Length: 290
Image 1 (cartoon, rainbow, N blue to C red):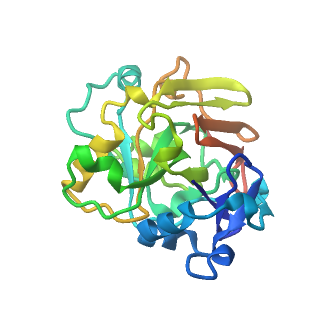
Image 2 (cartoon, rainbow, N blue to C red; image 1 turned 90 degrees about the horizontal axis):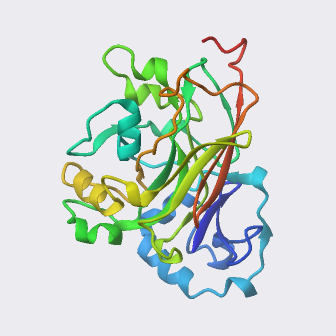
Image 3 (cartoon, rainbow, N blue to C red; image 1 turned 90 degrees about the vertical axis):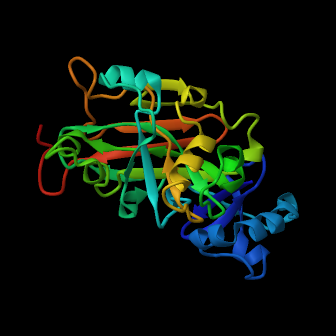
């Protein structure tokens, strides 16, 4: 099952058709939807309903990229995990963590899968990530039970203002939470749609030049581990999201460093889930300062 946010309305993507969707509120007679975020609070009931639908026989609408919004638009908690790939820890010159290096991205930074994002300065970096969506409250969950609390997966970019991130002792949350710094999409896909949700190719490119290319099987803390580690400290709530970390290939570790520029387009993908594109613009009222 693939759940999209089409113009603010919860929409199921027709199997085998990335260009058609079925409005959930209409097909359910108002029992579910149209609010996308609210579906995660009743995920088990919604999944049972959706699994019985024959979407090929339902009235469908066109899925226009311009109308697709973030499939998780208003999570209560957004977790980010740093240094969760050996390759990224190595390129950053950091030791491998023994517990997940966790920060937050503020929910107001979330934007859609094909959005324009304003660059606040000349030191904004890219970080393609597999993003986990919580579908069931998780409180002190064992790793062996981690996946049962996951509603689905989506593609994300943990865009990072490196100047602010490393300022004043480390402003990770602010440096990763400018407007639009958390593009998500194009939809949330349930794990059963994937042959192996623990081993997915992911990567990103800038104007066609590949920047990152890896597999999620290289995660130090896999999805089930992250659910267990985080829920040991704080309950995970339905609709929360977890940015699981980024592999090697970011801009600030390159020699010389490379950062995103106005007019560039960042394309990000995760195998079996889909592709998102982010176009960058200069800050309002002026040029990007280095």
